[in-house]
Length: 110
Length: 113
Image (cartoon, rainbow over all chains, first blue to last red; front, side):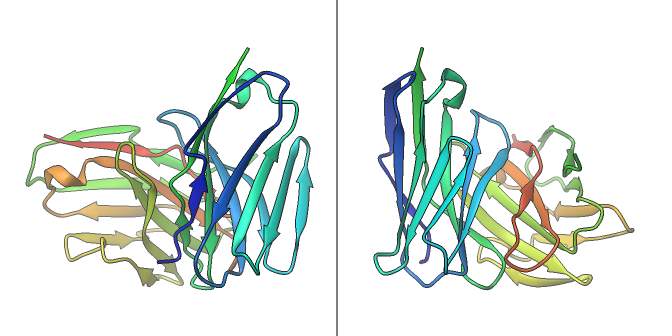
């Protein structure tokens, strides 16, 4: 299975702190995407990183990709209470469908 | 900003009944998908659709499931005879091309009683 696994499963931090979530996967990928999901709601796309990229930034988000280790990390800097959500990585392997990980539930305490 | 829309937001049905979940993908997108998420579990791929035919499907997408693009805007998922275990959130997604960002709808929560 090429499904990703996120680590940690749950993370609780104080507002203003940085949050780091990790994702590991098993097979070669074309790209890796991070999504956010508020409780019981839809998936919001955050960032896509292609297999030939090592790092991407978008606002307070920083994503890294290490294809040799088959891993990615999502860093949210200066977290806010509104960042409280579940975060999923999803890998795209060429078949154009996404394989999602198990998610990290982030709680940012005001 | 264009978005994927799904209707209804919540569908309640009796076991054995047929349901049709509806999606309107973003207008210039060419690839369409259905995913599902059982409560508390990960999002699972069901099927992808391109050029009026299924391009990929998962093991979950058995003979009870079908997809259709009946006109130029709608993309539907039909479950012929629902089972209790079909209860889940169903997400539709679309993207303009291969390996592009997939944009997800807000989902339809299906409850099978």
